[in-house]
Image (cartoon, rainbow, N blue to C red):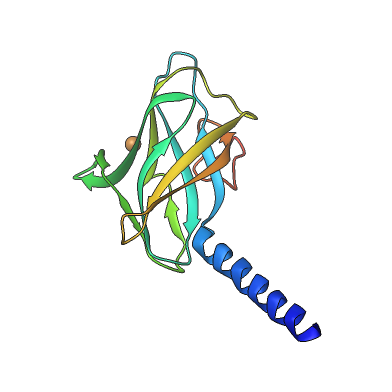
Length: 157
Ligand SMILES: [Cu+2]
């Protein structure tokens, strides 16, 4: 009887670890959105992603915007140029940073102004090699208009 209990427990533990692996815990940290002025219709969102398996970020949704795109940034001469891309590769075990001047999320057709202190939900759509999708929703803090990153957000930045 004791042996059966031990066997059942082992089975149970194995099931638990299988579930934990299937969920593929993607870690999203330092998520922030740049504050807007009332007439502004677009803003950027930035965050860090860490996944145990290689994934692609293939889409974003947010209740504050009718459209959310993934953008790349490149210098064209002296001019910084942004354009929409269909995905960003997230190599396994490597922190991928979406940041001003690099890949970032663009919230377009904003339904409201986003103001400092507010939290903005962002749902990230992720896809693995087998085209299996998962979604991760995070709350991004709104940082001042002139903030360059999520950590230093004092006025002189
Ligand atoms: Cu952009």
